[in-house]
Image (cartoon, protein in one colour):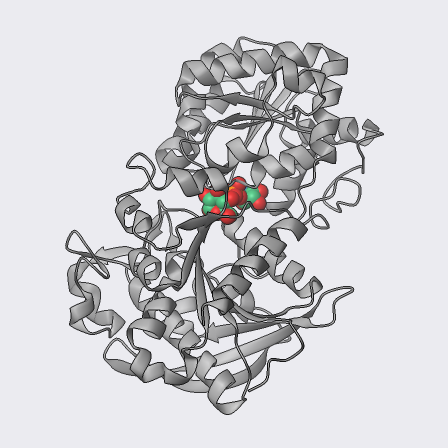
Length: 500
Ligand code: ADP
Ligand code: GLC
């Protein structure tokens, strides 16, 4: 078999979410933008996703394949649907394939409903992964296509590596394919009760501590880490952190044992979708050399969230309301913050206890807090544009995209120095201010006091218009594009190919 063109790669990208099809967080942004950037770089990308309700609602669905998937002790008929996505300026299109099995994927949520995980998530994603392997067989055995790399993302896709490598004898023709697993968040491992192991249809010998067993339970991510050819994560700092007990979520030993280590490739952003100069969600466009539109966006945001239109610092929070994001630290300092001349806007959904606390705070401070509990893509853009500061007090943050959007939109990030936040925000210091490279504020301890001190410092600097302006423009001019990161992935892919 000859590779499609001289040195272009065929990458099969497998994910449980990708923009524009399904999104609950940054994973979707990353997989969508990485796929198009790799295509622009001349590579061929096939994207594989579950056929969720959002896909099923489309009118232009087309069937590509149909087959039975042997998993969970039975065979299940699935349909693979497809769409080709044109990437401006690229030779190839992205081919998106959707694994459709309605009783698993035609549901209101991707992983959960009403804050509760679907009880059959192992059945759902084992079927998805097993169907991916079947697609690979069709490509290689029937269509005689070359596949260079299988790029997996997070626990939902990790079993692909296990099926491929642990059952190599069943998948002989697929053995030249190299697998890369990117861990976007070690806090989510796909852990299920041990008695569910049989749902994977893997030999019982793999339910052992050297494979998928994790303290008596099934751990999908662990399997992926062990059976992939390489493992990466989404920032160099997080790649180092996860080798420690503090950040390793119990898998630090498994990660440290990986020959070749764990690579850290920092995420970029889709600079077309997130561009304040051409963002259809905004009331006014703006750019670094003319911020007048940003003030229009600020007033529009205050109005949209029912806040008085005042010329006071506007602080923002966007994100999943989980322990990871550290928003509880913010709740603790709300009395101090609300005593100051500022406003706070919050967009998020998640932990119901945190939601209740934000509702109570909003009731207490209706003129100081703007709150929207839910998922709203347009509002996320308008908050990035209309705010002055973005708060990310994360306990851990593999990369974080919200602060990158903040930088691009001239909304200065105040972040805890961890993971990708440490790697992407240049902290305010005399030296960084002098060299005009500071883009935000760091704090170290995950404590309310440390967060408050960082916010107070930022508020103080905000008053010094020229310095603030320099922070804003340095952030807006920073290179956050995907090009460099996509090239780093290509380098990783090529290194893997060399190991064939
Ligand atoms: P994570 O992937 O851990 O959730 P990231 O910062 O990498 O964190 O990415 C979060 C992504 O999800 C960003 O695109 C952000 O705008 C978006 N997002 C998070 N919460 C919401 C929400 N409630 N409504 C709209 N977009 C949201
Ligand atoms: C995860 C992480 C986040 C990262 C995103 C995309 O959900 O929590 O930090 O930016 O994946 O890689």
